Length: 382
Image (spheres, rainbow, N blue to C red):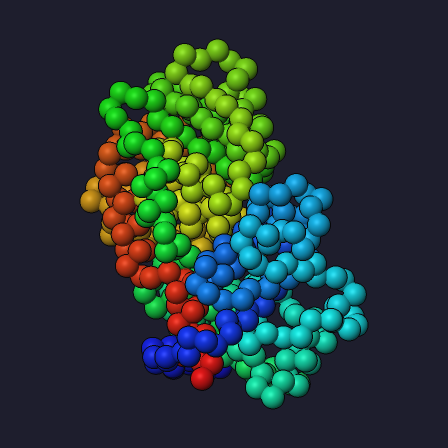
C-alpha cells in the first residue's frame, strides 16, 4: 500500500459538465446497519450534485429506511431522492453484470464487486475511481490506513480505502449540510431539573434487557422510555410494563425511516443505541449515549468500544463521571448492568450532557465524511 497524497488539490469544473456519476454497492449483512450507512452517504452525495446509483442485494431492507413499504418495486425506492436504485442480482456474482461502471465506484465495507463489473472497470479507457468505504472505528490505526491504496492482483486496478472515524485525519462522519438547521427546526427542548429523563432504547436482543429494566425501576428517578421497534425493544417494554411503577413510563415506537431518525434522538435526553450508523447519529446529536456495539468473534468489539471511550475521556471535566460512564457501558456490553453506576450517571447528568456536547463540537470540526469524499473525487478526476 502507498499513501494517497492528492486530497488537498483544488479543481474548477465547467458549469455545463454533466454530473459525475457514482455507483455505490451495498450488501446487507447487519440488519439495517450496512444499508443505513451507505444510504446516508448516497443521499448526501446526491444533494452535492452527483448522479448516484445505489446497487443493493436486499432492496426490501432499503425500502424501510427510505420510507417505503417492503414490497415497493426497486426502481421506485429512489423517487424521493433522485437516486437510481438497482437490485444486486445473485447471478451477477457468477456471470454477466448489465451495468456499465460510472466514473466513481464505491464498494461498501469490502462487499466485493461482481467480477464482470470489475472487468468492465479495467476495460475503461480511464478506469473509475474505486473507493472502499470501510467500517467505522475510533482506533488509532485508522489514521494511518485512511486514504491508502491497494492494487488488484489480476486487473491492476487501484482501490482506495476510506475509513470513517472521529479524528481529523480519518474520513469523519456523515454530517448533512443542513444538519444544524434541521436540528433547530425539529429538535426538542433541553431537559429541565425535576422533569423525567427521556430515554431512547435501541439495542441488540442478546443484551442484558431484564437487568436494565430492573435498574430503571429501582433508580427512583422518573423515566419515560421509548422502545424502538424490534425484539430488544419489545422485551424491554414488556419488562417495564409488568410491574406497577409510578416513576417509569414505557412506550413502543413504530419504525422510523432514516430521514426522521435524528428528530427522535434530538427529542430524548439519554440514548441507548446499537451498531454504527446509530452511534454516529447519537454522537452528532450531542446527547449522552450508551453504545451497544455489535459483538465480534475474538472480542474485537471490546477494542473498538474502548478506543471510542478513550477518545472521549478528555471531554469529561469530571474524571469520576467518565469512569462511571465507561464502567456502565463496558458492563452493558458484557451482558451485565451496573445499577449503581446508572444511578450516579443520572445524578451527574448535567455534566454528562456538557461532555457529550463538547465531543460533538470536535466531530463537527473534523469535517463531514461526504465532504471529504467529494473533495477526494474532485481532486482525482482531472
